[in-house]
Image 1 (cartoon, protein in one colour):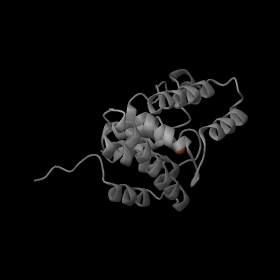
Image 2: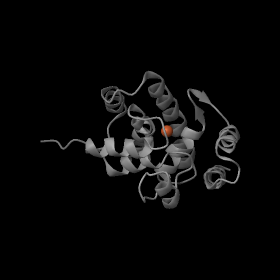
Image 3: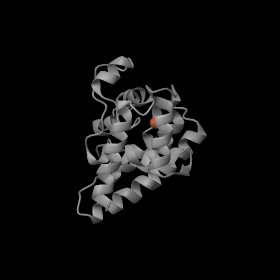
Length: 177
Ligand SMILES: [Fe+2]
């Protein structure tokens, strides 16, 4: 018997999103993030980096799956739980958990009652989905600076989340220059 892949295809991801009751506008956003994530993946590969394209695609499509339950800051962690409940690839659960803002440190996660867990994107695939999400507002492609401004207004310029977003942007600008 053929073992089922734990990284679902794009078609399977869309089915999963609908089964979980994710709203249409969130699904449209995810499809737009997929486009940006694939574009980033191609450009990064041309620079000689190894990227798991199927993992990035599934991560991009499923990153907001937790929004079927909540739209607050916990939707990443909630989404990770859904991915694990469905026994999908653990790497996918981490992409989903780590896409919020530029990632959330252990200390902040604890303060936000998300648990004492590190939610900062580490792998290239985690970073690509996180960054692609920051380049799409709803269904609109935006410049990173616009997202940064949004977070600065929401959280204040001194918030550690701002520094992490800056670092994420610097990471990609350095690779892709
Ligand atoms: Fe999100």
